[in-house]
Image (cartoon, rainbow, N blue to C red; front, side, top):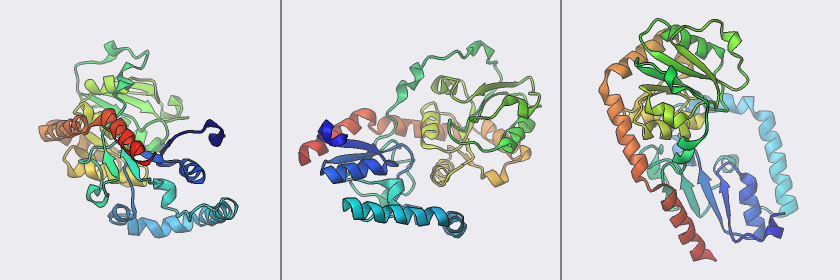
Length: 312
């Protein structure tokens, strides 16, 4: 199908192994774009929890890894593809790689060569998305925005801890539920809570009014929070989110709170500290400036055209 289209080059996501393989099979130049943190063997192995997590991960995923090896061998035998490692499926690097993080937010940025360009956010137009959110519902109290994105679910206990943490505090909480979670399972909500389903609020506009963002440490959430100078509490759900969460904390733009340490007390104590210390917002503001100055979509397009011109 791709051969019939006769593309001059292919742009594929870093998780799109098929994009990389199609480009290789058709001998077409390709560009990899990375919506989260860029990964390689060096910055992955250097993560503090990698060695402790890896043995358990290997045991849990042994059947899948066996299936992976079988598929990889089948691809090589049928299409003469180059060897594919497990790391390749998460990176799929090319001669040109565009990452949507600024250099300041990329973990282990010094571990990447000149084929990687950290251009920062390329999608601020999300602010114009149509919505039915009533901004008149927001009060003058400090606003805590809680969202774990449209894919990840930290589990019902995290949401219950959030309710217990802030129900008696002088704050307003806007909480987006994870996919497939029904609000009824959480019981009655305090009067200072606004509950919405995932994806039903204009996030960038909400962040303009937000004093603290409790999120999962994903690249998009971190970029948008920093864009609006909002400090963060990051509760990572995946390995790369943990990497970004550590960078947020190292930069002083927020606090990393492992899910195993999430309680109503830890949430309340962390939120109180961040809301009372202006340094967190100041550092998030600096990170937002780094996002704005990274080059954005224009730099990404310029680099793509420069690369394509050099190989075609």
